[in-house]
Image: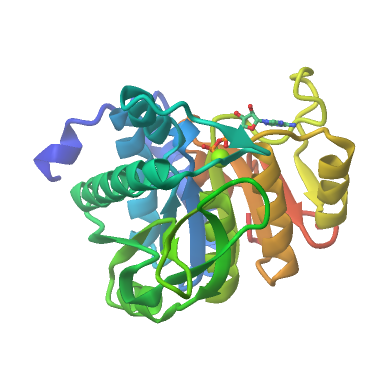
Length: 304
Ligand code: ADP
Ligand code: MG
């Protein structure tokens, strides 16, 4: 085994046979998902430190090695806010989306670029060659200004999937910073959740996974016993209308609804801080977090 992996402690108390049985249980999921695109949004809030980021990217590298085509879209919440404050710009959010003036846009593009390259570096270290790109590369994303008081905040108008398809087919994992020009070339900050769902739809992805800093959607955020394990797009709409979800959860739930209405089989909101959240969601029948589907599903179709 490569030295750099040998250093990672396994802390596994199971016998060899038990561990092999767990791997074997993944077979139906692996069969079903081989060759499929999965879009993973790694939220700013879940990127608490570099070690966690490295661990999450090891799981993404594993997907790459079992023949799944992962595409990573990242956020930058905390780090953008941190640098803004250092520069004397007070971060402001409306409905979970950053109000972006020209100075904030420059900070956002800079910080997003750094985060994307850092994620690509972690993937590469885990053995999955990755390429960091923004919406500006090869016309990947075209934005359109969102109506309202957000300033330079855009939504995705167009996705040009060719660059993603060529990277994936050549064995590279694309890592996308959600910064995109509009048709006149002006730069916009796109909420990473919304960028991820637009990309998942355009790619015909099987799944959209949103990694964040909560275990999923709570029916009542103050009641930790109210975590929802699955809901339909219609039920998710009701949660937004009733005000049960707020702040950063609003674009997240919206983008899950968009994704499943746009042909993505399932969208999941999972805790990116939990160990191996991606693997438990994809390869076990336990699942985790909140799953959003178009219709009620029994979870037994092998899609995890
Ligand atoms: P990210 O960087 O992953 O996009 P956000 O901070 O934008 O993270 O969004 C996640 C946040 O949404 C959670 O930390 C939580 O405070 C908030 N939230 C609001 N309503 C809910 C809810 N009903 N269930 C879970 N989280 C909620
Ligand atoms: Mg957010």
